[in-house]
Every structure is written in structure tokens, then in C-alpha cells.
Amino acid sequence: MKIWIATGGTGGHVFPALAVAHELASRGHKITISCDGRVRKMVAEGAPRGARRVHIWASGVGAKSRIKQLWALFKIGTSGVALILRFVFSRPNRVVAFGGYASVPAVFAAHVWGIPTYLHEQNGAIGRANRFAMRWVKTLMTSFNNVTGIPKNSGARVVYTGLPVRREFIERAGAPLPGKTHILVTGGSLGAQILDDVVPIAVRDMKNKKVFITHQTRPENVARLQKFYADNKIHANVLSFIRNMADAITDADLVIGRSGASTVIELTTIGRPAILVPLSINPDQAANAANFEKLGGGFALPQDKFTPKWLTATLTELFENPTRLEKMAKKSLVPNHAVKMIADTVVS
Image 1 (spheres, helix red, strand yellow):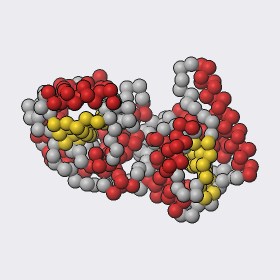
Image 2 (image 1 turned 120 degrees about the horizontal axis):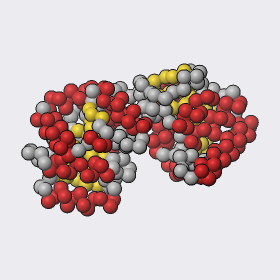
Image 3 (image 1 turned 30 degrees about the vertical axis):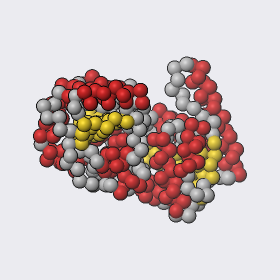
């Protein structure tokens, strides 16, 4: 079977797509992966052997400038027409799209030719690009059981599959808490200023400072945070990039971070309690954090309520009652079979 996988924009869309591409390729299917220029190198390095790669012309429509929005729509439309023509000669049997603006051209071209199309939504609230593309989709696959914003008149069936993660997270699923009072602070690849401002002060104000902090932040904040922790005799490792996030999460008794879909699913795959502070301008992150909190795995807190005083009291209570952390860890654990489930759905 010839399967076209559409992805692009960010690693959050690309890594799940590549995981599924490898699974489908291992089953003997012929894979083509389309992406935009931003992730071209990432796809080239991670694509399965023998997969064809197609570059499309696309960019996000979220710019404030009306001219830039129209230019982005023009690029997406042009790529859609180009793929319609390409499908004349290399028509796939299935199209699997992993969300974002870079998926729209392939979804539209598949609709024109009547090709069964599958769309994956990674967040707890459906994004704008996916909501737009839903009109042409046969099946919507979701990362969470509850996803808001799905058009009621789309006609697509909704299948809960989970979000694919890299193999190293699967291998650490259900690992017991280390019990070393170890906190991981991560704001994603760009860091998060609110975490840098609140966490160090909250830990400083704890009566028992026998905690170890791994704090990932922006490069320009590393020296400042290192000095603060050292001046207050707090054991901490401050760094701008965590090379092996699976190890970092496994080694933590508690995670404090943002609530991007990848972060939340990585937490639930391994099974770790967390305090999640969604990006205030991002409804997707708020929905992801709410889904995690419903599991009983931790707290979802708006930025305006994430204060040093609240965090000091919460950390003190949690580390004085380690059995509560263990219960939260067990509740957060969700078996992740997303790669297999998506592959089965696509080829069934």
C-alpha cells in the first residue's frame, strides 16, 4: 500500500509522524513524507529507510499582518494545487496528516481524488488548521479522550489513539518514583519565564531545602539561575537543553512545566506527577493540562495563580507526604499504544 504522511511546522507534529512512518514501513508499506522547509532537515534525518520525501511551500496563517496572512494562504493554496497534480501520477492509497498548516495541502489534494484521509489532533482542543481540514477528513485520531472544538457537522469518525512518542519513553513506562526529592523544571525548548521567576523563590522559602532541581531554561537565564540557587544553598543543575528528556522525567519525583501535548503525553507514558502551568495565550495547552488533572496526576494552574507562596506550600505538602506523590504517579500513567493503533486504523 502507498501511504502519504503529511507533517511539518514543529517537532510536535514531526516526531509522531516519523514514529508512525517507521511502523508502517516495517509492515511493508511504501511511505512518502511531505513537509515544509522549517522541518526539512528533521524529516531527512528521521525518515525510515527508503521513504520518499516531498517539500511543500507553506507557512502559518497566525501572523497579525493581513498581508502576511494572505501570503501564507496563497502558499498553502499553491501547494494544494501542486499536490493535486502530483497525485495524478503517484496517487497514494491513504493520506495520514499530523496537523498544522503544512498538512492542509495534502488533505485537500486527497479529498479531490477521493483518497481516504486520516487526521491526527495532538492537543486537547482542536487547532485552527485541523478544524479547517476536518471537512475533507474520513477519520480524526486524537491524543486525548476528550477533545473540544471538533465541528459537529464534520461527518468524520473520531478515534482515540493517543499521541506517538519515541521508543525511550515507552521503555520507561511505569518506572517507580526514585524517591530522591528530585524536581524537574522544564518550559520546553524556549523555556518559560514564569517558571524561572516562581520556582527558585518557592524552593528558597521551603523550610526543608533538601531537594535537587534540574532546571531547563533559556540560555540567557542560565547564569542568573545558577547564581540564585548557589547563593541560597540549593542543589541544582541549570541547563538550556536536555538531551535525553526520557531520562530526565524518569529521574524526577515531580515535574513542573508547560503543558504542550508532547510534554503531557510523555508524562502519562512514563507516569509522573506534575504541576502544569499552561501558556496563557494558548487554549490548546489549557485543555491538555485539564485532561492531565482529570487523571489525578497533578495540578493544572493558570499563570496568575502560580505564585511562590502557593508553590512553596504545595511542594512542602507533597514532599512531606511521599505516598501522595506515588498515588499521583500511578494515576498519571496511561499505556501508550498510539503508534500501533494509528497504523492499524490507517491500514484497516
